[in-house]
Image (cartoon, rainbow, N blue to C red; front, side):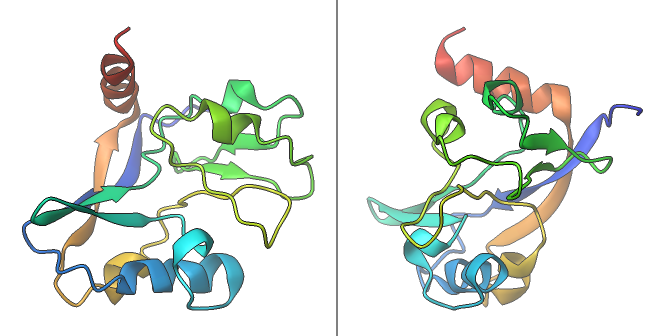
Length: 149
């Protein structure tokens, strides 16, 4: 398989966010068929002073090598996905994720993550989110820099 060089990730415009959490609710519908948000959402919005911050997977793929059973893979479109049938629920990827974006919930054994489906983008009334295409190598460089490597 050819390795993808780009991937679509979420871009957050903090100056537009009002903290309504409609994005989290939309994500919960994707992962849990509910609109609870919170721990059932792969996107997390946090208050940061007078504005907001987003916590979400940036598709760096560093978690792939951490999975002892190969449940994490990169699709042809660049998105890193988790196979629920292969996952053993060890949570190694959750503990390893350099930006704490791999999510877990007491409602299921396996962790989950953003798959750049765009449900949150469509749900945001303030247009604070968008899907943008970036180079995969550029994402890894940013993550390594944040880790001090």
